[in-house]
Image (cartoon, rainbow, N blue to C red; front, top):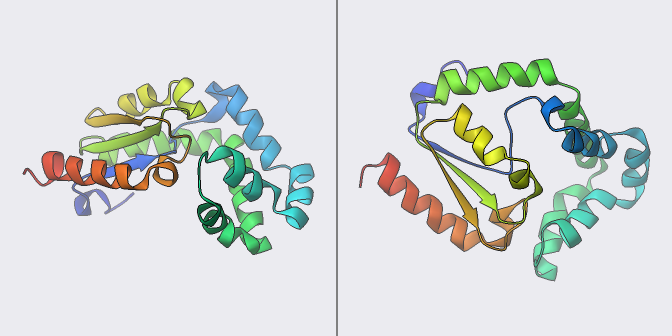
Length: 173
């Protein structure tokens, strides 16, 4: 984050975390499973993760929306890198503890918008409150009916929310 804070005036986050997963064992198990070798072998040939996420995890996307989501995952390297990132997130508590500290130190004083889907399982795990601890100036907003990726379920609503928040909280309008 060195040198980044001076360039930021505020930021928005959705569907993300900045802390160790040891405190969230069910999510850590899911990340290890998805990032593991068995699911990896299946996903390498079937694109299972992107297909199931597009179909079931994102909710009411159109056929074109699901195809757009799956598009990058046609490349096996992209799938492998995404799985690796998920698996590493479950096994990188020391690194993520450092991320949590640095986020708070470097951008904790900035205005932040944290957007959640109403049906996002991480919301039920208390992640909005956790972001509030890391980012005391954060405003948390729940998108009705949305899931883990609210920007996919309600893109116009999320865009309008970010624009309104930016004008009020960051640009001072």
